[in-house]
Image 1 (tube, helix red, strand yellow):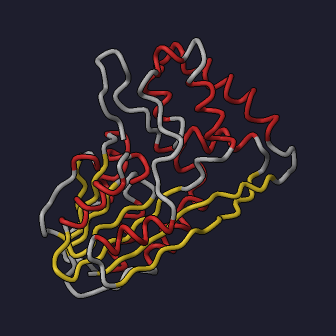
Image 2: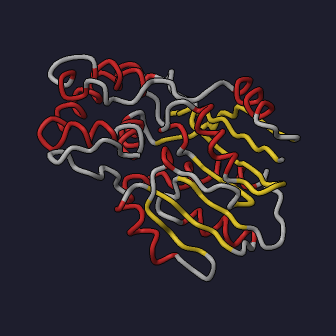
Image 3: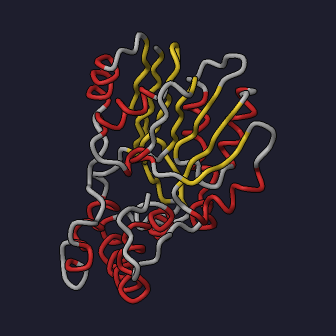
Length: 266
């Protein structure tokens, strides 16, 4: 989610085509999260971080929702989502970090987006306030911040020539909580029921080189936005040169990706 964008920095580094390059792998956690939701007639739903809108539409149709709003901060993603709007489904620009809608929704849903926002406790408290009585919260967040792909990006961000440009703006290695911490937080927020789990998705990529392509679709978007067209190509090459030797050179390459899924009902 782009924040604090200066006039000389590209405002949107998200590339829908790059993100969807691994569409099948990225979609499975969505369907696993959707399976936790308890459908009810006439639901009002918000999908935070809707991306290209493909899965938001799946959510809307699967729940036969009365109203579904997909929210995203990326103009490129929203442009891809716009043609998918159907009766009761619409897409709007918005920043998850500023989202507030007191008692407006029966389901607050977010698949692979909330990890961009620091202070998860404050965020979930605010999202909980957006629920109606008896509402549900369903969230999936990546939990692979300790993987080599993340560590290498953080290392390079702290080194010249990237350090000065990225100072204070590179993504934190860990913004998500542990499953246990999420469970305790949900209980403190007054949820009567909850399901929290850590799941490893074993993605088989053609080679280790595809880990760089994967990262370009998500993790590296912030670096691309902040570094701009002059520095980012150098960062990407340095990232590739440092990351690949740390990965097994096997074909296919097993890319184990950890995610936390949680559902809670009032």
